[in-house]
Amino acid sequence: MSRLCFGTLTIGPSQAALCDDEAASLIVYSLNKGINFLDTAELYDNYDVIRKVLRQCSRRPVIATKTYAYTRQQAQASFDLARKKLDTDCIDIFLLHEQESMLTMAGHHEAFSFMLELKEKGLVRAIGLSTHAIEPVRALADAKSSHNSIWHKHQLEPGAYRYADIIHPLINLRGIGILDGSAGEMITACRQAQSTGLGLYGMKALGGGHLLPVYCEAMAFMMDLEFLSSVAVGMQSQDEIDTNLSVFSGLPVSDKQVKQAMRKKRQLRIEDWCSGCGKCVERCGEDALYMLRDKAHVNQQKCVYCGYCASVCREFAIKIF
Image (tube, rainbow, N blue to C red; front, side):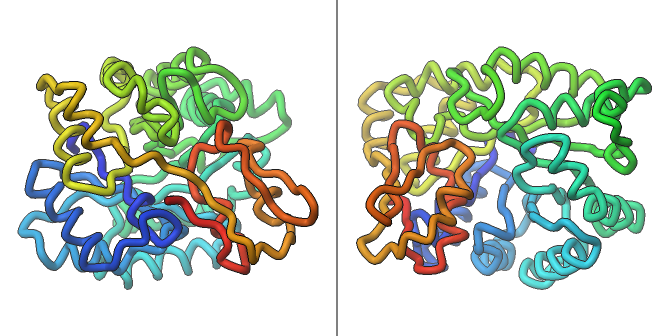
């Protein structure tokens, strides 16, 4: 896989909201430039765009997708949807989405066991999880070891998690968005995971845009992490693709080039028609949303612009621009 992965969340309905043709053209441009790894999820609602891409490219990229499934039936439905929408017989990487702790992992164990069955049948090539927290990284590393001491401490059994292949952790220069510790603690956990044979590819290299002022330093930090096979970066323009590719190829980039490519400051906006249901506040893992006078509001300094809150907004009142 290419060291730079195209994180497709940023071209989906909750963020850039590009039309399908525009979004597909952008991904095709990145593939023609040498990127061969795409990260998506059922939540991102962009399978149709990626299918358009696959019909235009001569060499199929590696595709990772994710599901929030708890049960076998939900996992089956997520898998069937991905395979149908992407028009493919086999899913390259199938992950449990956004696991927060060992308790959430235990709650999703039935779904993960089914994902293992899919792998054993050759319908999925690799399985694992994505996370914004350190504990699931440590838990998977422990499950892969012969000790299982962390699991036993919590009176849990790792079961199918012993056969995980991949972790997609949140990690960046300042640890922005990590739910339960520091960047240093995440690095230690990731190195432990790699030592057990798990593959890792990172996310949120720029902390949802908060690290843009130190772009070169933040990207250098990610590239120095030897345990990361790839880094998923959300991109919304050809300038961003070109700049990121230059950095990941070890080529020099000027301050002017960085400012030109990264000039768009991202912001989460909650529209006036917010009904005040509070679902987005409950959904936010960063404590960036809060209720005030029966409306949801955002602390832009805490928000990492993941867009997950938008997925539970029944009024479609949340967008990232």
